[in-house]
Image (cartoon, rainbow, N blue to C red; front, side, top):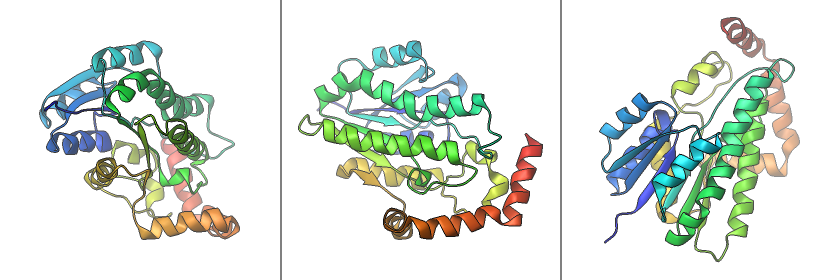
Length: 261
């Protein structure tokens, strides 16, 4: 029996590392992709049958190295690499905007395109790791939300385009997780009443969607309800989240983040 292969971007830490661990526990050969060689090596020690590819997914030459490492067949592609910057719409700079658009949206689209032949050969699955902010847009996370909305739209369109090809598409929308990226908005966690999941919890939920071939993966009933309200009665979310954005505790926390930067 041929061992199945999963490729995970952003595999050096956080959700990516947890996904590599759960994939290995299910008998998958893992191709670990990231920009930091030491972080990839640390993930590889926790998995087995791993190949590490140091590459920047936002660059064509990096994606070429990934395609070469994959070969002719790929069972699962997990577009997990992401970037997050927080700030008001009037203050966030071009570098932050470009980083998020390139990493969160353009790179998954380009890498999926480049690996489609291998995915079709294996009748595999594309997994795009988005966010709850890709359904419920949040103030001070506006650009990040926009990239995740885009990734969700791309996932839906790709699934419909590939219908009948044997390639499935899963869009995963986790809540915030306790990772290195949390440092970007840690002062907002309390004032905005955010719930943070462990990376292992997020990875287990995403992998369950992969194993069962689901189109979408959301955290739980409460989050699904919020998404339904957002789609049917967006004005209710506008009032609730808008009021939260104006809360003095939230604006003070945002100012603290601004000064820290």
